Length: 126
Image (cartoon, rainbow, N blue to C red; front, side, top):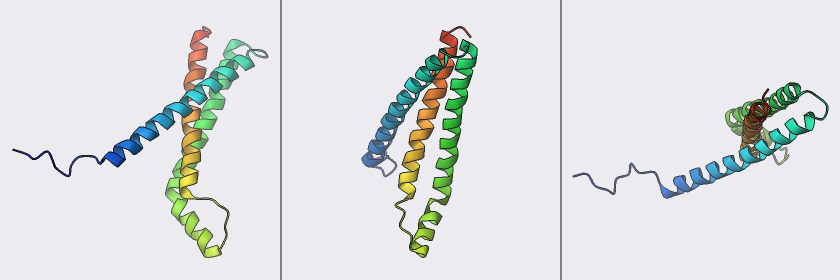
């Protein structure tokens, strides 16, 4: 009979970290959703519903795309950039972890924004 004390289980620390990431992602997606709705409604003051929601969607996609692209660059080049800063003796305060966190925020905010702009378009019957 297999033992229940196997090393195949995920450590509690990893589960706690994953839980914190999911909560943070949901929080930033909600912020993005609020922005998406606000931008869609704000643009209704100057444009037609279709143009307003299309523009809001495009702006959200821009934030999402920039966040994902910059996050991947921070992950791929982060240690190299930190090493170059050490080599050149430059102290800018930039860290890989800080960059990953910043672009995590942008990515999830953009994702929420895009979904909310699309939902606003549906709600307005466009």
